[in-house]
Length: 230
Image (cartoon, rainbow, N blue to C red; front, side, top):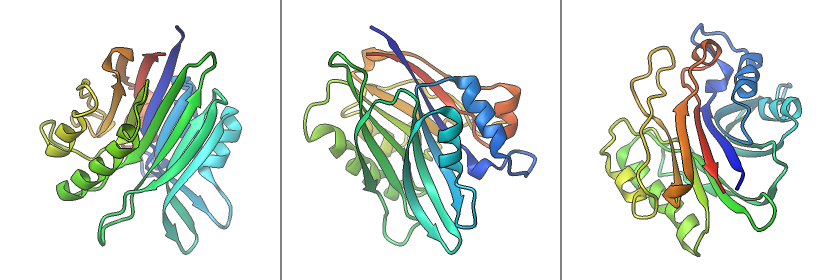
C-alpha cells in the first residue's frame, strides 16, 4: 500500500525567529517537506490583500480549507489544511471555543486516495488552559467515535507542555500513544507542543521534526512530519 506523508506546522503568521514576516520562507519549508497533506496553524489573511493560505495553496498546487477562528477588523486568522493529493471529498469546520477564551477550532476532512483507501484527518490548535483542552479533546473524540473509522489521523498544535497531561490521556481512549517529538522553540526545541496520532496505531511508519536551517528560521515551531501507510 502507498505511503502518505503528512505534516503539522504552526507557521506563527509567517513571523520567523528574526521577528520578520516572510511567507516565502514558509513556502520554502513546505516544499522541503514535500507532504501530501499539511495542517497549518496561525495562518493569517488581511482584507487589504495577502491571504497566506490561498497564496500557499496556489504555489503548491493544493486544495485548501480555511478554518478561521478569529475575525479581526482587517482580516482573519486561524487554521488551514492543504491537500496536494486533490483528494478531499468531505470537510467540516468544528468550533472548539471555550467560554471567554480565544476562539479555537478544528478542520475535519475525509480524504479518498482511491481503491477504497479513505482517511479521516482532523487538524486543530487547542487552547492554553488545561480545563479548556480537556473539553476540546472530548469534542474532538466525538468526530472519530460517532461511527467506526477505518483509518484516522489527529494532528496539530495541542499546547500541552506536560507529556502526562490529562487531556492527552483522554485521547488514548481512541488513539494509541505516539512518540512526543520536540518542536518548540524551533531554535532549540525542548517541548512537544505539536503532536500527531493515528488510528490504528499500526499505520504510523515514521514521525520526526523537520529541523532544517530554513525551518529553524521561518517560525517559532518546527514542522512535525509523519509517514503513514494506508
